[in-house]
Image (cartoon, rainbow, N blue to C red):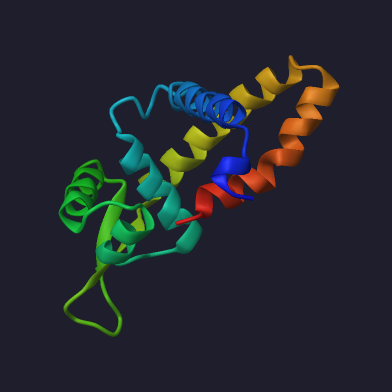
Length: 145
């Protein structure tokens, strides 16, 4: 299906809803108020993919390498990530979460999941099931380049 075939008003409504929901979820935790969305995404990405080189993190998060360097430095200053030597390439390092980073992510996810579950419970069962059924497609959409 092409963009011309899509209902542009429906697409705009979906965009707005996804943005608002994401914003509301970001503010449901007290501990990450001073972390940027990119910093939070990097912590999540490392959890999904394991230790990563800064250049790979930059590509995965669609940011420029100098910007990723600043993000990593900020997270490292907070004790949430560490730099380890690359096992096969002495010119590179791998970024991984520290124990504090693991704990921070687990706490943040639990808080956000609880908030979302409570709000989903307020919807009628048909809407709730439609949203839950759409989750895999939304994930695939989010993973597109």
